Image (tube, rainbow, N blue to C red):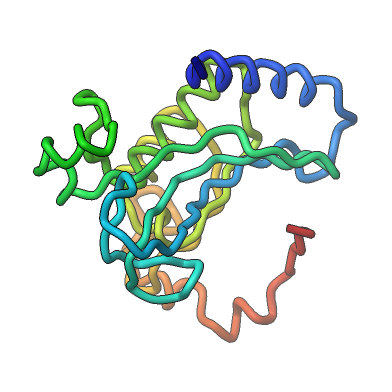
Length: 194
């Protein structure tokens, strides 16, 4: 039998050792939160439903998985992956059982899946100098608060309509008023190979 939890823990602990052995990099150890999708034709694959699929750039029938990867210098690895189980599946436990989904697997928002992965990685010795993620995660205030509470630095894309403050207790403004598109284009760019 495949022991998923044991394999994941072994991988994560081994990568923690590898990261410690790598030479320092100016960007540090970067965690990447993202998701992957796969279009599907049927209705029996666990988690399949009509939802936004990045692989086709639109709402279509398919599945979504949430991932955390790591990059340090030229080293890159995928560290964790979990199926996103939509609410419609959560509400149909018979369908879940028929698809082989254990009763303890429940709906969690994607940001919660990602945060749980970061916590699990930390328990296994993988720590990030900073995390990066797109607006799909940067728009989730509970994720931003949780990362801030545990002292995890991050760079995340946020919606332009977000209310932000540049100083603690300072005035709150829309994000696009603090950093206009013109200002952003004139700023310093950092390019990552992948």
